[in-house]
Image 1 (cartoon, rainbow, N blue to C red):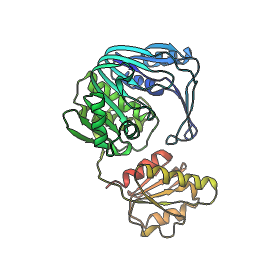
Image 2 (cartoon, helix red, strand yellow):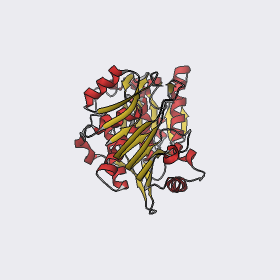
Image 3 (spheres, helix red, strand yellow):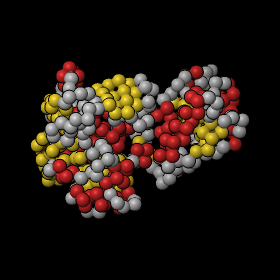
Image 4 (cartoon, helix red, strand yellow):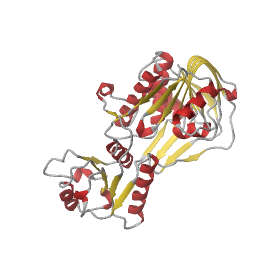
Length: 376
């Protein structure tokens, strides 16, 4: 199987991350855990980085020189990254093969000619038209997110957009990644499938889309699974990736994962101290991210009335510092409650945590946990 995609440095401030992966690198790394026949085609300007990667994952790498590094820098994993890159555009990578996973690239392009191809454009700035650069495929599936889909079509609904893109590409299927809502699959015969996301205790967000596309490409392209089956397996692998925090997945957990099936979201209530810029930033970021999922939130800055709320609750515990007060209030409420606090090991000392409460030390995981809690 051939993978063509970026090999980039990824940096996050909170939590602290500094790693060499990128879409192509991560896809190849995770595929190396389930098959020995992987070749990565990518640009690189640092032979020591790519050689270390090549050795660690036992992957064959076709290296094409670029003139400088590409770096994705995040404040936190759900923030919009700052991308450091050269303005020069490298000659296209040409790839032939039986099964190819083609990612969009920042510093160049990939022209692919293969029997079975999965194309993940990785950008909303150009329409997701696979053949526009001369690429060919006997069988093609487009895997992309909702934003990329919306910018590639003129229709108004996800189904109509997927149908339009499927016809433009003459594809076998369109797979739309929808984050916390799972994914949607439309086949050329008109069959439609909604695939759930799966619950994980923590969410390692950077790279989830890469993992999804890689696993889908393997099961659809190599194993010849039905697109909906391949998408379901990809969704499960993403949950395991989120849980593990890396490409070494616990495959024993795949069949035990809990699907999140829902039609809509309940509103949530966020309890947060709003004094000071830092506390206010965390609150506004939480509200903004939930709104991107379609979840509305009201805000309370005191815990006095916590017991009366029946809808799901997110407590930004880092903004409050009186644990005894919070814990006493929490005991009075039986709603689904997610508490975000990097020091939550200090909570509920001396007695067991109530079952309706989830303690989360990571901001990204807290946002996903409250989103899942609000699913109905």
